[in-house]
Amino acid sequence: MNEKKSKITLIVFSGNLDKVLAALNIASGAITLGMEVTIFFTFWGLNVLRKPKVNSKIRGAIKRMMRRINRGGVDALPLSRFNMGGIGTSLMKKLMKDDRMQGVEDMLKYVKDNGGKFIACTVTMGIMGLTEEDLRSDIISGYAGVIQYISEAKDSNINLFI
Amino acid sequence: MNEKKSKITLIVFSGNLDKVLAALNIASGAITLGMEVTIFFTFWGLNVLRKPKVNSKIRGAIKRMMRRINRGGVDALPLSRFNMGGIGTSLMKKLMKDDRMQGVEDMLKYVKDNGGKFIACTVTMGIMGLTEEDLRSDIISGYAGVIQYISEAKDSNINLFI
Amino acid sequence: MNEKKSKITLIVFSGNLDKVLAALNIASGAITLGMEVTIFFTFWGLNVLRKPKVNSKIRGAIKRMMRRINRGGVDALPLSRFNMGGIGTSLMKKLMKDDRMQGVEDMLKYVKDNGGKFIACTVTMGIMGLTEEDLRSDIISGYAGVIQYISEAKDSNINLFI
Image 1 (cartoon, rainbow over the protein chains, first blue to last red):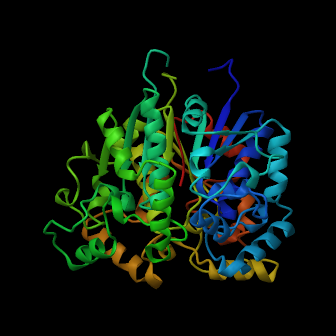
Image 2 (cartoon, each protein chain N blue to C red):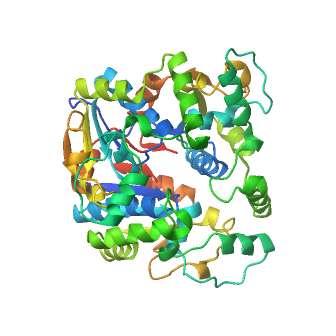
């Protein structure tokens, strides 16, 4: 294992701000330590990769409704606890600023600019009512399914489901 | 590590439909790639292995109540978000059908029929008010505790807590 | 890998009683099997390490509020489901006692007394409104950030995010 570069592969299933922050903190640290970093975004985690506004033409009333009630974009992620209709989430963001903690967007850029890969899960995009047009091409490195995830994860030093 | 078969060991703690789908998707993919697959179901995850109807005689009013409010069976798993008293969950199932995505039951069968193992956690069955009679013997490969989990997990390529 | 001691590294992100129990069960099992055990507590997981009463002088009204509504201490952890204003959590604790399942405090002591390490995440202490004075020095082995986490995790046999 010595000659190979250390590697970390994360699944971000959650679309909650606190969990996404935890994931990106770990990813940023791994980048700083010179590791290979890949994050697969699936289910609610796809919200991290979404453009803030609904864009694509998609067929099916349920898909359109799902896409509408399940708001996406880096700024719309709610806390997993004490969201309180968005008030808790706003306060948390203020605390982060006061503590000079990096936000989601900053960390996405840092990881991406330093070779980290962000993959959108094609299996769940459909049931989340999302097409490639709804997602940010400036951030996404590729689209893939579970087979690519496993191939990547099976020789990683650290695997986490977040 | 080269001569050994690759191995994946999952803990399914959650009884939410979306998380269970994520777990079984990964398990199915690993089976397809020829890996050894073991899933330990614990806490709310035990609901996946439950018969839809309450069966066993169990002592203790609280255990019986827990078993009743915490509904089990593949068809009773709620979404982690937007469950909306079951409406969100029904819509999600419709979307899955439209997208020809396999359901929980199909994936359980695929994994089981191809050598995957499903283990029920004996430590938490008691506090969930469940006995072996409440669980599906057609699906379960065995009953075990945390020591067996660790023995299995410690030489796995991929370990996830879902 | 043979001459090295097996190693398990957990992140406890959740402050829910059921998830904390799962984490400590796994940690206890690993201790019993002679593995090296390290748990990093972050975000809501820091509640496990908190003194039951609010202590430290901390600047900022939002931090003080966060610390107050997000109650801490081993006895204040709520269930992730069916908490029902604390009723569900009390019933669960009764079931655990009836089944002679160890509680959080017992398992913390067992793991700690047998060489397990509990680390408080310094990155998130600030945004959770916590200082070292709010946390239990009898239980905590150290304070660290994400770089130390990754260094520990990258040669662990089992890594989980809970």
